Every structure is written in C-alpha cells, then in structure tokens.
Image (cartoon, rainbow, N blue to C red; front, side):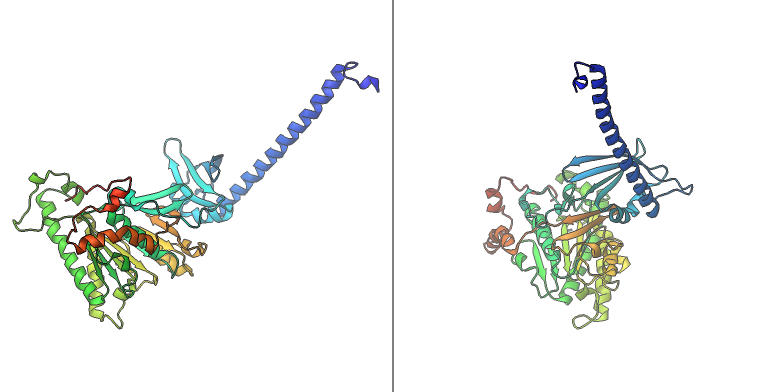
Length: 423
C-alpha cells in the first residue's frame, strides 16, 4: 500500500485527485446545462402556446433570470419582433404556465428587451392603511403589490369603476379612499350617493364639504346640479385660455379672469361617489324609466367632460352586468378596481378580462387596471372605528360652525396637512 502514498508517486496521486474533482465539477456543470436546456425547452413551449411568435414563427429568446429581492425576480427576454402588446395580452397565460404571479411586463426601448417581473410567493392578506394624513394632494392608495405600495392621483386617474361581490373588500376600499382624499384636500367637495340604505356612508355624515344622499330621486337632482357646473367652469377656463383646471390654478389669483362678475369662483375639485349604481341605473321600485335614463345621461356627461373642470366620478357596484355598467359610461372610467367575482362574466364587465374570477377569495384582494396596467393588489384596511377616530373632530367643528378650520388631527400627526393651492 506504500506505493499509493503521495510522497512516493506525487504526480499520479494529484492527477487522481484532480480527475476526481474535475469529474465532480464537470458532472455538476453538465447537470446544470441539462437543467437550463430543459428550462429553455419549457419556455419555448410556453411562449408558443401563449401565441408569442411572429408570422415567421420566431419566438422570444431567453436572456437572464435574476433575483431582485427574496420575494421578487425579473426575467429578461429578447423579443425577436414580438410586440410588447402581445406580451401584455398573454400575461395571464404566462402566469398560469409558469406557476407564478406576474406583476409587470415592460419594454426597454434601447436594447429591445422585454422584462417580466414576477414572484412565486403571495403577499400579506391583511394590510393596515398608513396614516391617511400622509398623502399629497389628490393622491390615494390602491394597495400593496409584490413590487411595493401603489398610489395614484385623481389628476392621472380622474374617474374610477369599482366592482366586487359582497364582503370582498369593496366598501373598505371606498372608505379609505374617501377618507384619504377628504383629510388631505381641504377645499375639495364630496357628494356621496349611498343607495344601500345609507349604511356605507355613515362615517361621513355631518362633515363639512360632504353631501350624503340616500334617496334615488334626490340623487338624480343632485347629479343634474353637478352637471351644470361643467358649462360654468368651462367658460371660466376658456376665458383664461386654459384646457384644464390644473392650468387655471397656476395663474396668479389677481390675474384670473371671470366671464361674468357674479360667476362662482370656487373651482375646487368635486368628487361624486355612487355606491350601488344598480339602484340608480335600473328601473324598479324607486325609479321610473324616465329617471333612470336621466341618471345615465347625466353620469355619462360628467364622466366624459368632468376631468378638465375638476369633477370626478367613482361608480361602485356589486351587480356588474351590462345594464348597470353600459359601454357609454364605462369607456370614460379609466381606473378600474375589481375584487373577487364568482363568475367570469362579472369580471369581464369590470376589467374586460376574467382575472377577478381567478382571485383567491380573500377580503381586500383585487385586480387594478388602468389602460395596459394590470396589477393584483391587497387593499389596505381601514375600519369604521378607525375612520370615526380620524373624522369625529371634524364633525364637532361643523357643529360649532368652524368648517374651514384645520383639525387637531393634523397637529397630532408628524405630517402637516397643507391647504390646497387650488382655490
């Protein structure tokens, strides 16, 4: 056995050691190469089945797959002539085939690459709302996604459509949405049309700048008055050579022109929330066909023309059929958020796809859509008790005739609410 000692035959010994190590390394490399080829074959099959190929049958090419953080990865592909729109259209099929959650698909125009951001892990089921005092003017939160918290602004998403079955989280979203906008925008007015016996708007009663309406006929009359603001405000914008309200408020106050000396100079933004639109848009016990047609026409006009003059509409329903949300109104509702739906057709009515019917039945889980943007979100929770804690002081101020005061709530927060520059 002595002839096997390293000092007797060092070259032989170290050659054997090197061979063993090399065999292990090359074996590992061969195994990784086989895994990569298998992975690429699977991707090729997935891309083909998802319809991601050109007329010449060219498929996207794999470039890399890297980890962004412990929850999130990014796959980079060379698109090989396949347009971005087709990747976005195939997002659901890719998610299903790859057994992952695709959050975002975007294109790098400099190098022709497509980046698919995805996760194999779900996110928290319950998320509390950050202090509603911490949002810039007109901003609101949509919820959490795997790519972080998502906020938007009424300046970018002026009209919204909200859908969802009972107990899916729709009311919670509206509660935190209205509260956030109310406490941060102290010149903004609100008309809350609550046609579910007034129970959903109970937190917002007796507040300055808020009109709560629970009767269908009164709702139609209120909407007609709001519609009249469009022509009044349009004349003011025209007199100042402004296309939209944002441009008007950049003009110094002393330089603003008003076509009529006694015209209303309060051009602050106005939010209209219609909760349970079916009660307003379907003829029945409370409304005749004449009132329904009038309501549809008025809402359609405000949705189509309200953005430029600072009028915003949020339509919410748990009965999303085409009679409630017709195309004339739906076309002008750019932002859409849909909670769990029990059937594909209901999801299609809100989102134009079936994603909401495939959601886990988790309260607060929804699909957000704005144009080509499509995200699965977990809406933050704001309870009735938390809302009342925030708003009760403001209710007291109204009773004392102090509707224009800044509340003590802001003073208790590290964040100071800034009065809006607009008006």
